[in-house]
Image 1 (cartoon, protein in one colour):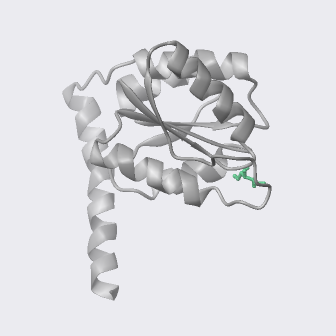
Image 2 (cartoon, helix red, strand yellow):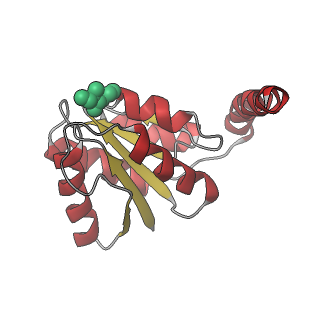
Length: 157
Ligand code: RB5
């Protein structure tokens, strides 16, 4: 599995630890930066390219980290085809995939320590979308909102 990973300064240290652990566990890691700690950087500059790679299928899943995980989650969810959530517990880490087809996990580098983050990521990466009719029906209702947004965007450009 190819896993994209991205973080700003608030998530940089946790991203580095996660990337190392993923490689050690034989995941293929695509690191969208930051490549060095820069206290003045902005999370959309790293999260957005990673989220686009998930939406295009260039990576299978994504890990987005900022200080709280909130900004990373908001940025990732602006990309059509991305289903991102800020995750703090193991149940949501796998159930978010199983029921909601979550493809990007967002973590707070100032909130979640490496040991828990690694448990969350393993639960996320090993989970699979169940895909029953009721799950697809709910996701289709959300996907319809993405299409609505695209039409509005085109009208204004
Ligand atoms: C950056 O200092 C911080 O605001 C950012 O990493 C994140 O927590 C935003 O949600």
